[in-house]
Image 1: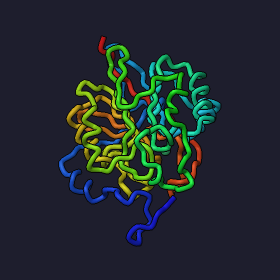
Image 2: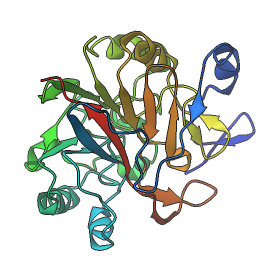
Image 3: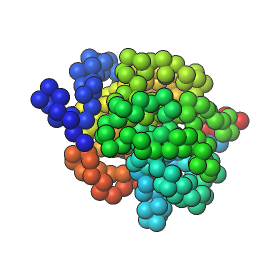
Length: 280
Ligand SMILES: [Zn+2]
């Protein structure tokens, strides 16, 4: 998976370590320690939705269900990378597994590993040439047991959830050059309460595995402008966890735990939970 660029072993030749060093000055970021249930905030005194967050299950949702790892909640969010290659067999398997879960609302977005889901992808640029031709065009049609979001919203009890899969890691579906991501995030509505992206924002749980910053500056700037209560993402598995600024709780929900080099699956991270006030 590594590439050698300018004598350096990298996954993302366009990662933005230096940019964050400049941007972090004056920005607040506090680490959240989840409670014994995995909750990243306290339930409000008014009616609320219990939101359970998973991501990056890479064909292994069945194992998480077998191990009884997924807590009940009103809404289950999956922030992308449900498969590794977007093949129809594993999409169908995921959909069946999703159907077994009791959550009344299930929201799913695609990740960079959902090959075939991005109709405008230039497959000749795929990270691994062996992946050219792999995937399922319009594969989301197989996901009948959830609400699939792709630059779109859904509203539950007055709470607006918006999902988007764009990211700056070249060679995969939903890749956009960093300078073009700004216009993609312009679609995020100002009334978004829960933002779901596959990519992290810059500087927020976005290191892969420990040195490359894969996050997007324009996504952070949009989140700072829109101020959703919650921003859920995945993608950078080693940075599973939660941080917050004054307005927004950020959750990297990556479920598949990985080895120190970021590339080998070694079990699962516990799903995290957030309580979001209803707006009805
Ligand atoms: Zn992943």
